[in-house]
Amino acid sequence: MIIPKSKSKLVTILIHILIWVVFGMIYFFQPITFSIIVPYQLWIKQSLILGLLVIAYYSNAFILVPKFLLKNRTSIYFLIVICIAGGIILLNIYADQLLNIHQLMDAAFHRNGPPKHRGGRDHGWDLALLAIIALVLGVSTSITAIQKWQADKQLTQELEQDKVSSELSFLKAQINPHFFFNTLNNIYALTQVNADVAGRAIHQLSRMMRYLLYDTQQKQTMLSQEIAFVKDYISLMQLRLTDAVKVKIDSPQHLQDVCFAPMIFLPFVENAFKHGVSATQQSHIDIVILQRDRMLDLTVKNSIINDNSIILDTSSGIGLVNTRRRLDLLYPGKYKLEIIELNANNEYTVHLTLEL
Image 1 (cartoon, helix red, strand yellow):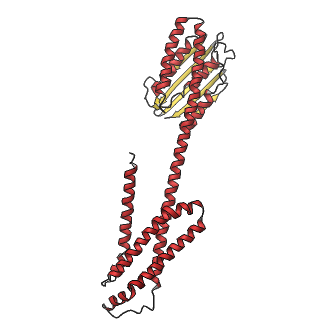
Image 2 (image 1 turned 45 degrees about the horizontal axis):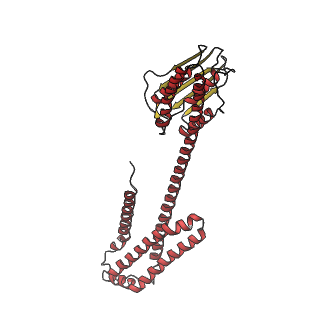
């Protein structure tokens, strides 16, 4: 669930108010423990100092840290912070003198017993105030720095996500024309042989292009749709193959339909047709798709044929390169791709295992 920014800001404001209420209660708690009637002048001074601490906190958070500390102007930052701390302490001393806090407190203690010898100004209060100022400014600096780090991290992630999306769109745009170009070449060859078969091929291609134009515009499609698309592609390619080429595809009978990145299978299948069929020699393509829970297994084997006159293909072969790149971006650390260019049976093998 995404929280609207307005509500998020309201929650942040309420949290800040609560924190300052709690801090104020702690700050005002010590005079209450004196077991005397505390003069109201002390409460005035305490309220004044608390207000200065609030001003110091937010001045540090919104001005000093962003403009000085985070821009590597540390010397100026610490100089200003020391001036703020010194100013608050001086104002505290001046308030004590202006409101006669020490005399009033001595009189209050005297009413409850003999006056204690104070020996001039009690510097312990100044040290305690200095510690409080350091705590407030330290918390302010820490929270602001963490928020800046989180904001920068989120921005970096958003930029990286935008970069990945743009790159995926570019890669996909390369793969689709690649497929379209090869298929049009096949249909062109069919028009020279059988116009009726070519018409069926155009109808089948239009159905496949509808899938490319509409169903793959989202980042993911359904696995069943992707497998159906591959089968349509194979069926279209088989229209112009001779009996010398044996094409076999096995897919799960009871498929667990899951979301899947579109156009992952096609480059491997397309590559098999590009290099594994011949108009004269015996050749074969075997495609096996297995599914085990969330694991998807694709194996494509094809015979290696040097004579590919049946395929009018002048493309640069960018499909496999881009598919590997897409896998790196979409499923980092969740896939394994093995390519054996030549085995004992003179076959080219692609084995992809993918965790969905």
